[in-house]
Amino acid sequence: MTVTANQHERTIDTTARPDSRAAGATSSGRPGRGRRSGRRKRSLVAYLYVLPAFVVFAVFLGWPFIQTVQYSFYDWDGLSPATWAGLSNYLSVFTDSALRGAFGHALILMVFYAVIPVMLGLFLTALISRANALRGMSAFRTILFLPQVIASVVVATIWVSIYSQDGLVNGTLRLLGLDGLARVWLGDYAFALPAIGFVGTWLNIGLCLVLFLSGVGNIQPELFEAARLDGASARREFFSITLPALRGQIAVALTLTIVSALKTFDLVYVTTGGGPGTSTTVPAYEAYNRAFNTGQVGSAAAVAIALTVVIMVVTALISRIQPKDVQ
Image (cartoon, rainbow, N blue to C red; front, top):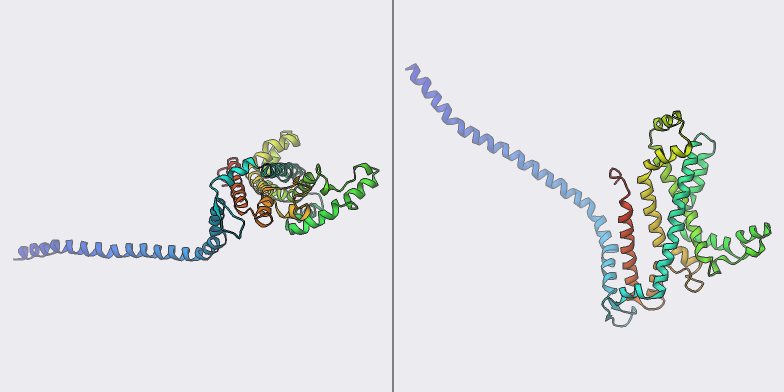
């Protein structure tokens, strides 16, 4: 009887186990669904945080951009009914001599805004990194970076005064006995564009210097010490250690400075207004002038879109020299 009772209990236990496993599976499934539901809620909350910024972007950037693309396919003066123009506004970017000249001027400004500041920034970085213990270095950096925090309209107004007939540049030339070189720099067909470009150089040197010095600060000091113990010269030290380590900062500096050169507007608008003649026109100024002065809204929109594409292409090309770990 005892054996039979034990066997009966085992039978009941084995028959009850599947039910308990099913119950366990059911209970274990609920927490999984709960975790997934929690993740969905967190994702929804994250999207809600992003939503205000997205709405602002869509209203003030996204929708105007779509409208600009639409306008670029029409001939429209901003008031009368528009007529379909197809791709003629985009073709004029290549066939119109004024627009070709504006994009050519932007290429020249890229040299002053990007190439020269980056080269000077690297040179100053090499000097400062080796003379880090000298007194006054922090003040020197602050002075060089100061133009970046001044409004561009204020900068343009200051340089209009400096370049004037009785301004600082001509006064210095006369003081040195070089009266024949004095001129109204912003009113000279040959020198107006380089004069604007020099202002861009002055603006961007501080930006490049700060970026490069931050990169040098991330280089391990042991590398410089080892190079100096091996008898490496300052030039060898710069090209073997400093320059390779600054690839990411150089890419960032080139991106910022080239984009600033391509989208230059306020500096040209305040200093020369595109003159004398069309010697200092740039794409952004041409877009403004055609939209608000000559009633060529469709052409202005096409110029703006073409400029946007150029900036995107240039940015993509520069990003190829950026190290993967910095992207």
